[in-house]
Image (tube, rainbow, N blue to C red; front, side, top):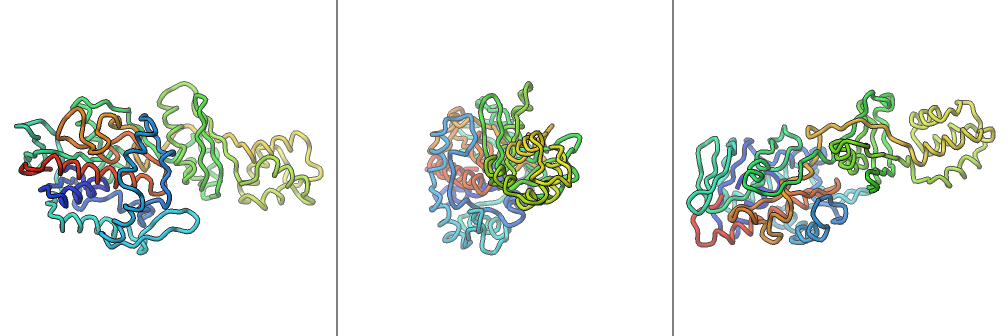
Length: 407
């Protein structure tokens, strides 16, 4: 097996438990680097409710659901709590499942421990350099020399957060072997604007409704929004960022992003302004952060000393437009450096949905972020990694039954 990230560790555990002899090649000295940094060092292991309909892929939705349903969410949770001994708790308000310890290291170390107990042989600090068919099996080229294997599981991830070891080698190998690829792109990544027109709002955060429209399609997200010195971040921004990124990559018209800054829609804001007895800024600040309220009033041309009762028609219209459907300027994104996942990858119909075995290269199994599917933030992408890793591990073990050694 190649890659000791979330999917690779899970594949190794289940393959070894099913009786396969497993070597696990990992370029870092300890593995699971993305697990360690996820959730701000806490590791959002799973969502409390899985949302297959929110996954993004070029494949039909029913195929994405088939991959996810191979290991139901309650079974995944039971694995972590019972097998790995990592109790999980739902975070109030977000529905995310974190380890009770709030330590991502407990998750990574727990998976490594299970792998070792199952008999997995780790080869840390070993670079994966290539793969070629040899003698009815595979020859894996590594910095420590070649390894011959009956079957190979590639779980090398994509291109996101390259500091953790993701460099796209596995994707290039898969493409060279003839797999149909969906062009990779950064997903769940912050957006930027140049010049940084909202730099003075850096640090302001709030819950919003954000809509991204491109080519007649609208993607919507609700949740946290954060102004940064370079642009925008937060869950809502990350969850629609792929629309912006792909529109930029395609050229032509860019995606239009519109923000509703609070739960109040246009009608509710009209009522707020109609019932206000003092200054407009006071009425708006009751529902929005003060700095943002002041900026929206400035853009709408509403003076700081304007009383609600004296609000002019064009001022009211301009303010309502900005409160309920603010056109968010953006010019780019933070790219793979800060992207939480990689969009695109190996097309899902290139692998068997039950075993994750390649349809192009028998004896090769692909899983995790290498595949063309990702979900929203909140543990969904770990759920994908755990499910596809387990399926690939079991598939590889079944393939190697009666053979000598698998990697």
